[in-house]
Image 1 (cartoon, rainbow, N blue to C red):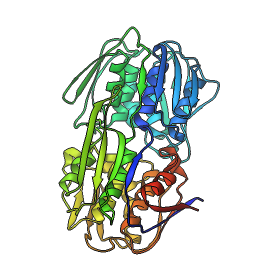
Image 2: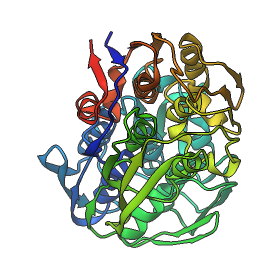
Image 3: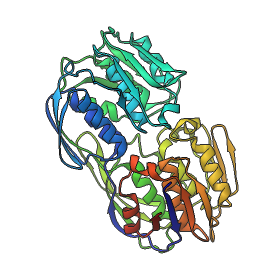
Length: 437
């Protein structure tokens, strides 16, 4: 089992660029594959999760050339050009891929089966299967979890659906199925969530309107191939944003070419409310997504009660936010984040266990954590933590080493490759004392 050894270090500085956005990489593949014509994708994230999507699309008959790890040429087959795979489509650890492919494949004429690794096979899938069935799809789960078996040939009809909780993955699955439905599909959300699918579909020519928390898609005749530039992943940048805030030496860290989709950057608002000095520079429009450079400086953080309207906009970044909270003056309270219970791990439980092992006072709740921060001195003791096989938990505790009294050993880190290949090398380039054993 792979582990990290993260030791305290003083300086986090220089200029870095994080790998491409995982969410945008998944969606660029799916939409380009069913477009008419060839699409060029640059900045693609060659992580295990995204490579699972790439392999699945190839198995469905889409020709994809990979000029380099991050450069793709996708020869789209059109909305009705996918072909049956000869085997089950293995999504690995990619919950996003499984839910999005469930929507897309529900509308095809052939049968499909979606499987994944041991972790993904335990994750809930009925919240996406249920509304797809309302559209007329014929798909089954096993006790609410994968495998997902899809019987092809169903005639889908557009529906108006109110999401029980804000979920970009469920919304995206319904929009992908809605491309093939009779009549428009409308998805209403109780709170904001990521809008990468809406942006990508519109960029490829879909007839899609957004009014506040409602998205309406009218089935198009076809989508058109495009040139897609995938920005740096904000969720990956989040670890270095917190690292820059916690650094002992106030040198400053620049993170270049970061995706600034407003449905993804809730962590910036939260950290700024806590006193974080984060400057957005050179904000510009990329293909389908806004992009900027970030300057992060060492900051004295204060505990806050995280506003609930920022929870869905920062849900993937909460593990590293908990690390920042442990280094803040006073208490930080996160609630309304029950979604953390059904990620790659139960992130509330796994982070709570790790914080306890490192001497951080806190209390866990069904939907969040209350963390007692320590602004002066070492906020974490030396120790050993389990990541639960969760990539974001593993990377978050590596950042905790910046304010630890001694080395932190982080167990079970192999899944970091699912979202952030090359993490250790980039972390060391930024100044962290991190080694894989």
